[in-house]
Amino acid sequence: MRLRALRGAITVDRNDADSILEGTDELVRAVMERNKVAPDDMVSCIFTCTNDLDAEFPAVAARRLGLNGVPLLCAREIDVPGALPRVIRLLLHCYVDPETEAQHVYLREAKSLRRDLEAAQ
Image 1: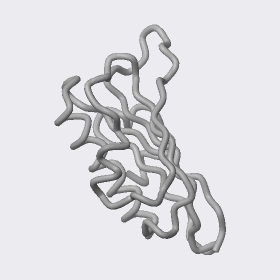
Image 2: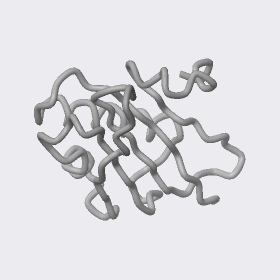
Image 3: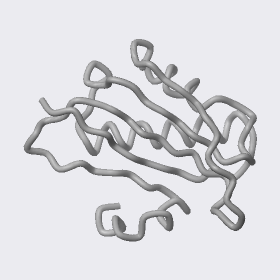
Image 4: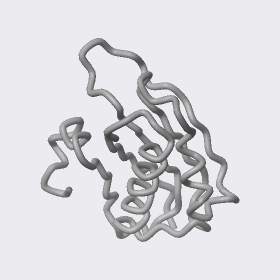
């Protein structure tokens, strides 16, 4: 197995707990499915949110998915003027098959953050 860092991001419609939890759930599931990652393969995961999202911690959604043994951290994204609003990002450190290419996942409006990956979305 090889240690990799996988990136991902998703936008949510509102700053409320349900939107943040649902968006985070969708993002984490997509990263896990596309990269064939199980909770036991995970080393750690860092979540960031833009300043306009503060109604809930994204890590709560990860815990609900069963990632209880994975160290999780939530932080603020840099507040850059004109940046895409209501974005949840993740950086997942995990072990994957060395023959498998990393599949970074950008969903909803967050696809615009990585146009170079659009073919893979």
